[in-house]
Amino acid sequence: MTVDLGILVSGSGSNLQAILDAISQGRLDARVRLVISNREDAFAVERAQRAKVPTLVVSHRDYPSREAFDQALVDALFDAGVDWVVLAGFMRILTPVFMRAFRRRVLNVHPSLLPAFPGTHAIRRALEHDAKVTGCTVHWVDEGVDSGPIIAQKSVPIYEADDEVSLTERMHEAEHELYVDVLAGLASGQLRPPEGL
Image 1 (cartoon, rainbow, N blue to C red):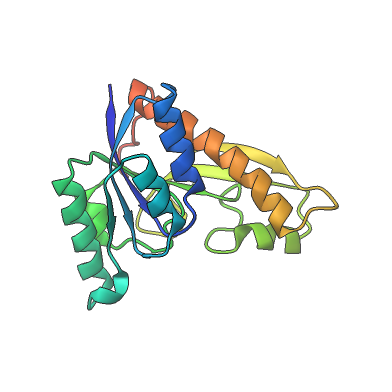
Image 2 (cartoon, rainbow, N blue to C red):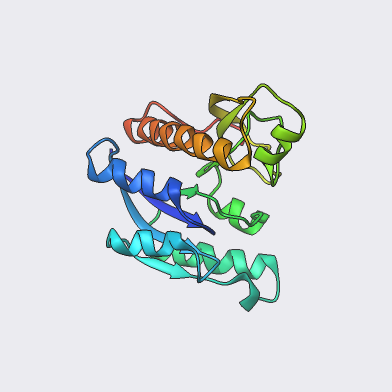
């Protein structure tokens, strides 16, 4: 079953690229209906345009409230025929307006083994805490911050010589693999959102 995705981005879009690559290589049965960025300068927009995927920049600064911004996202995603929303480095916390519209249909990837290090700067915080291992988590999104039910995790060792740059690079590799695997499970019908989310 081909899944129709809307992908929300704010930055470089390396997870977006991994998803686009997996689709083009036949490893993921999905269509990216729309990529939305809240930042005009996000390199992810260029990645999507190169892949001939529709893009939209919706700046949160153009709206009087977080709820109004989220409603604009919802309207654009519905208009594009999106069934599932994938957060790929989207640096905004979604409000109940968004979560009600796409209830049980929003996924996120986070660069830690949740519940450890939720929120921003998770890789830096793992290094500051002298952790020996970290990893990434794909989870269902609820109305909290990185608090939704966990779908899958992949560990990433932390080496003595690691700094934020080297660890981020290895984290991205793990995220790309894990996110595509999870989305493939969604497309095959093996992955279903939990009741009560």
